[in-house]
Length: 330
Image (cartoon, rainbow, N blue to C red; front, side, top):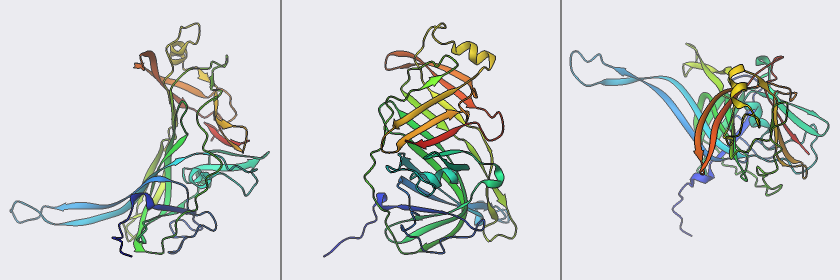
């Protein structure tokens, strides 16, 4: 049977695993699905950066001498639709996104049949080895990786996590391609009956879309002794922000302006998914659902013929790493 052997874009596979030693390839050229090293992701786009340094020392001639190649880095972006596990959570049974959340600097904890995630202290942030592998077996291998991401959902649509991973380029090599394992259940939950509330009066704002960005600042560490000129990456800071587009309402209904002007902190919680099949994801700002969300900007706009305002709120800390919490629960 003849076949042109074309590589399909959708056949990219991304595998990731926590490193035992920072910046050391934990896969060593081989990954499997036996311990859930691959993740259900789409729109996987790896990127290699070889810093080009212009050489203008051409003895008075215009043009260029051969460029020098400086620091070697790599990144990968991908998307994940989010869901629960579909079976009872335990200390070893968790959601598909567990390792990705850790990659973004969050720490998971298990209690009362639920997994909770909130920012980890810098000393407890985990680094990962990440492989992007094409069906030809060509792999782009990153080590010492950390990431950032944002959660997006529209009314009636799925919750999606958009991730950007940054790391040190370790190798581009041919390895054995192992496809991920497809699991059709549980179904992906959608943003309906979300019980969104904000403020002490539990105002149920009506809006069409939500975007929550962790906004980790990923910083390279230069290194004279490294083969690629960089030692690795660390999370230097985060600036988590929630954005919604609520309809314009009277001051008596909810006084967005006064809360914005006074910097009044608001409690805010919402769920995506139902309390069945262990398939619900809960958001809270701050981690204890106390007042921790500060309105920092409002921009009026027309949305489907309605008066609305794109509203940005900052998730603030009150006692350490407590600016937000995500819970996978029944």
